[in-house]
Image (cartoon, rainbow, N blue to C red; front, top):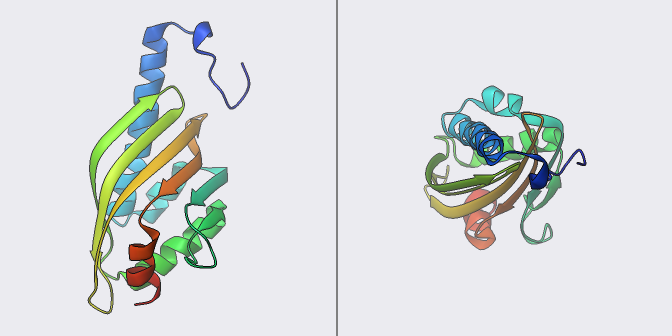
Length: 151
């Protein structure tokens, strides 16, 4: 078994299910903390070697690209400045298998210029040793850019 992958042939199905549920709870708690404005609680759930990938072309959507944990804090600061009342998250789907967790939700808020932000987002997360190590975020970058960046 490698450090980053689970060999499902080595484990009892109940163990896999337990690990999957623990990882799912960790990821859901991360997004719950972000939605509630508890950024420190959310950051505590991230691995120090985080690789957070936001879809899109950075030349067209400045928040796109691969971010470290420190860079993610900067990105969240930009979003916070654009949506001073915060972004609320309504999760409608979460599935987990082993160290992979996929979450779908709608992110809502109102920008400082009065524009409504409502974006359907999907995240694929990899959990290693009880911390979120990798995230791939998929969203409507045109809408996010219009509300969060161009405001």
